[in-house]
Image 1 (cartoon, rainbow, N blue to C red):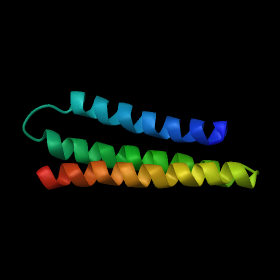
Image 2: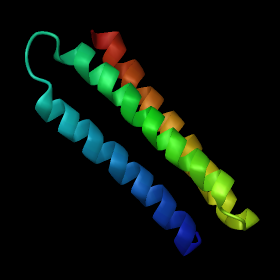
Image 3: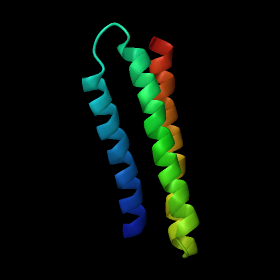
Image 4: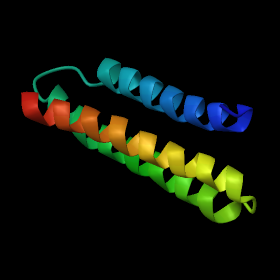
Length: 89
């Protein structure tokens, strides 16, 4: 795996992990699941927009594909986290 690809994917996973962990710590109480679901969806949307900006702004085709992989990773992991939370709420 190329270093740039690894970096893009690592940053996306790290952002999702830290965001989900921080949201779990901040959302306490009766409606914590719903709050986590809403803010996690916003976090996923923000990461998707950042990856889309990377796809649009980067000129090299190889680096664009890195951001496409990051976008797919965020969709897969973020959607899974939101769906898992929604199923328990």
